[in-house]
Structure formats: C-alpha cells, structure tokens
Image (cartoon, rainbow, N blue to C red; front, top):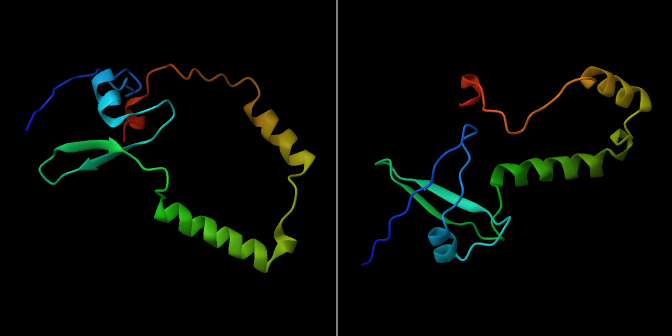
Length: 108
C-alpha cells in the first residue's frame, strides 16, 4: 500500500488550502464539500462528501418548518419595513474584517 504525505498550514482564522496532491486524489473541484472522520485514536480521515449526503439534523428542522407552514400558513408573513429599519440602525457603522484573526473565545 502506498502512502503519500503532504502538509498545509492553518491561517489565523483556522483556514487552509487543500494541497494539490489531495485535491487530485479526491478529484475535488471548487466549492465541493469535504468530510472529516475523526477516529477514536485521534486520526482524522479526509474524504470527499457526496452531493446526495444530507445533514439529518438540518433535514429534521426543515421538515418541521415545512410541516408548520403547511399546518399554519397564516403564520407566514413578510418582514415589516419597521423591522428592517431597526436592524439596519442596529448594525449601522459596524465594520467587519473577514480576514481578521479570530479571538481566542471564537476557537471553540
């Protein structure tokens, strides 16, 4: 069995580039998803996530929402202009730097 080894570096935001060797081995294209399987001994297996895979928690939540909308369509309402204005005022002047390092409390 052949083992190939490669490395990548984490940025301050805990992001990394998937090395070309790995992208080629998994036949990855841009915007495709990866799956991380963490073994009991601490090893992590990286594999390609299949397009037909779903998140059971998200599926349950979406089923709940769909059922509630079907049972109570009167609860569906547009967001009011007043609410939109209040949210815009609440975030007015707030600047976000998506490249800034995460704070220590954001690591968890």
